Image (tube, rainbow, N blue to C red; front, side, top):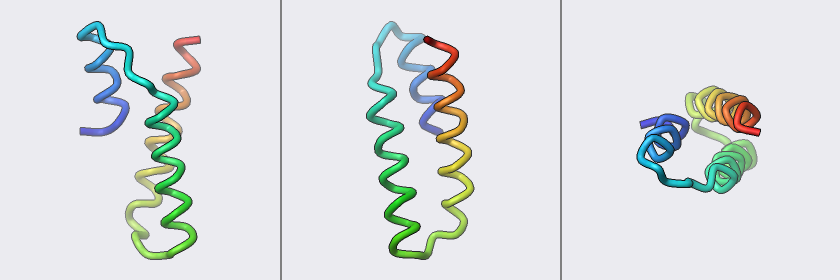
Length: 61
């Protein structure tokens, strides 16, 4: 399940997930891949998930 889908499901269940922690972890993973190389297929996925998450978080505030 994609991070944003998980966050949405949590919200639907009345939970308050820490979306900033999810964003921080995705960014950390993206930096690690950039620094260490490899995982070329993961880079576009992470970038897309971060864009979706930022857009979703912006809509909440």
